[in-house]
Image (cartoon, rainbow, N blue to C red; front, top):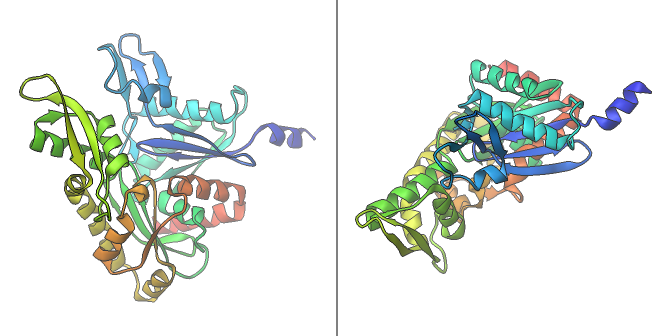
Length: 345
């Protein structure tokens, strides 16, 4: 009875710990949180002032003593202490504020994460309040999340375009057969837009504005009807406020370099895939997940670059966390994925 009572209150959770956003899946409740991976800290006192959405609002708008930081860079921990604060916030919110509850937590990590980086994620998760911590590679979790038959002896390919990096992988029998991690993602696209606006208009804009442009009119394939958007910033020459109008065609030109790097990673993965599995990939199509899958025309762009059929996941932002959650709820699946991961290393 005590064990059953404890399991009633403790619900294990899966966390998609991303460079840009973090998602939390709680067993029997589903996805309960979707918040930016941002922590705001008072540099004088060292006090954490805000985490998640509230902290993101402070980016670029804080006084000198307050700093809004992203504790993860290119998919891995860049600031251990801030990552602990972020994980503690996610775990407590996922447990509905019950301070004594210590759930089991599975966290997604990039496919090429090193043993040191894996250990850092596990340590941060335990110190943040987890009873036990497991890791799952993002491409494997994404494949599970979109319903691909990852446990079968057939090839399934996913391309997870996240905020800090892109993971491309062909998966069979629960493990990654061939894969490539490119340290290019949504943040690099934002920076490319910032550079384009500075170079062509002498206008300074922030990363939040660049992200709004990417979401609002961004595309990597010609549109039937091109879009436009007014962008405001500060003139580099006069230092005064200034507004311009950007078009989706201009944004496409700005995104050409990061998209070329992503396409190269996808081609590299295909080149290293055993011939027996290529036919399976063609039959199932390459599936694009992550926030980058929302970029207009990315499926057609990748298809053109690889000559393979490509489709975007129906709910690309949720694919990784849903797959990690399913693995946590199905212990047999989690063990097979974990064993395949150990064999790959």
